[in-house]
Image 1 (cartoon, helix red, strand yellow):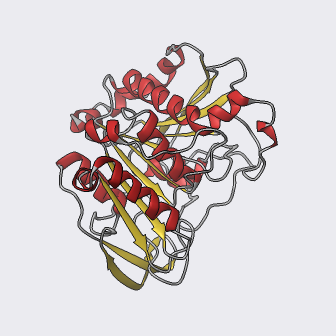
Image 2 (image 1 turned 90 degrees about the vertical axis):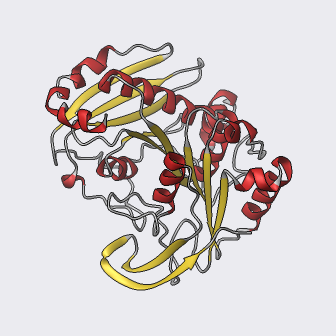
Length: 338
């Protein structure tokens, strides 16, 4: 099937225009644009990349850029972007999350996912502003709900709708990858909307960061439908709440059941989502050529798609964080937290 999608890539170019006619209640397609190879320029206000995320947009292959607004309530205005490759799609959908209070589309994460061959998406979580600003939430309980859980779910549903319109079928597999508040978003998806994603990678999840809706650890439905979850947390980033969260999941579901679908990796010496002088790269950034032995995300894919759980990952410290081509300083093997 994937080969057929690649062979038909030349015929997919007109499909960008056709995406303008996709209809969904409470959803507006704002713009559909074909972006030629290397031609994308992000808005001038785009945030600078954190370590490990490349901003080399000139290397991106051609894609359909779809800008959307979802308004599931009268006080909702959820901006979403979905990028769909015109060639070389790997058959998978990748949802991305947000740090802190969100407030913007992450073009860096979109570029990262597209470069890896995924249909990929990002949302502003229902408001625009600085990631440290929460004033928008005062007196707006529906916007708080959009931030807490609804925006990520709306984004997943809309993205899959566009995949069907573009390629004529659902994605073979759907994944979510993010850190910090984004890690919380992934856990919230597993808890409230277990059918949205087959595999979720949750980094340093801020489990108590929502306004009114908090992650409880009730992941039974996600486990029962076959979902797989990998959580990672830096050892220098106060990982104790995450360790406690995983312990609660094991107590709720039973140790054997929980270990059958969820793993936790504590990364010694790593800071918040990355950084530090110790080996700090475990594949939290998407790179097409990564091997699953060195990438928790690739190991998650393998687990979802073959049923074979990872038993370890090699963490690496590169000369330049996130850039394997810069050379390896040191490595260490990590195993799931017991």
